Image (cartoon, rainbow, N blue to C red; front, side, top):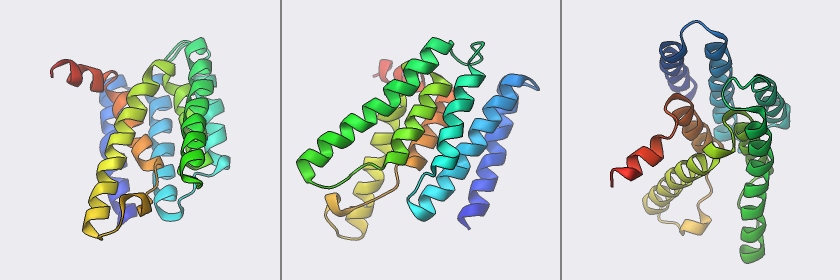
Length: 182
């Protein structure tokens, strides 16, 4: 059932990608990113893993796509890759120091690095805020529904990062525009 829902979602998102860029190299690159993110979503939801064999090539492909600034200048892509990994690594290190257990997987670090390579460092705050808020809301719901402590609720973060990235890809700056209205 999950696979069917993701296939329908993929079709809808690919239609939006085609509508935004038409039949161009941008569309092909964006469609590739979307399909890989949806595949990673399925894998993470099933296994709680984001495999290196997918996340690492996604990072390199993001840098290659931006060699000529397709989505962002190469400099922003490189900084995005480094900052994405470093930011999540730092959060995980602080969490581990406080809780004495891992709260974020290393696959998430690599996925955020890849997203930084594709979408640039400027997009990272939006991605992380959107993904984190959505993840916390889902964790709160699961905690409430199954009557367990919120810190005992474990959910994969990759699907939230993927959703935030696709939203940002299709509508850059979406979160900041919404917050400006408040």
